[in-house]
Length: 261
Image 1 (cartoon, rainbow, N blue to C red):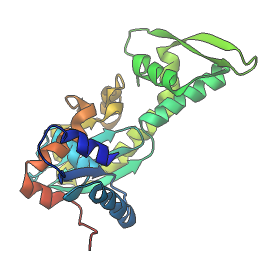
Image 2: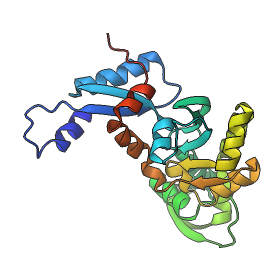
Image 3: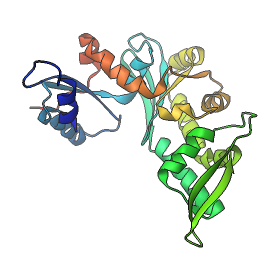
Image 4: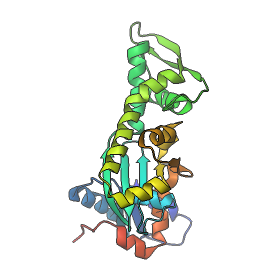
């Protein structure tokens, strides 16, 4: 797949054998063996150099945070498979947590709720649509309903039911609570001087999960800290990685050590 995208990008250039420099983002808990596997995959696909950067740092750069300054920046990147919570200062991660509760888990919550409450088996695409269209973390005062279709677990026949935003909120409650509790736990182990910066500057949400309606307000209420969603949160990570390609000094400072011999 990497080779396909490399060739696709260079198909209109005159380069016979493209050898690009690649920045790849990886989760914070990645092992050395996994790092080597990612590097080898990039080099095998035709990369001249492969730089691995921890996801929260790339997301913070994409969100426009001043990670090189001696101030605390807190970012919560809610992706599909993982939620990465990090406090960043002086181009490094000070405290962090990574959990597998993220967008995919929320979709599974909707699937399970439909099974338990309505005796209906939904497809993942339908559950994802329900989550995105009427999902929320708190009551926003605007009642919403939509129809979801699946297979009746009792009769085996097609079934259609109407679901409300309150029911979807109930389905997502456990995952939202887990994310908020881990944000608070990360703050509790952050040095006091950085906590003061975070309290003043707020927490930044990135990733597709940040688009869950009302999530920033729920986190702000529980943590008693201002929270805002980054502009175009779904692309913060890739924009940060792209910006690093144009900043050689910062890239070399924050890239993980290479495993190549």
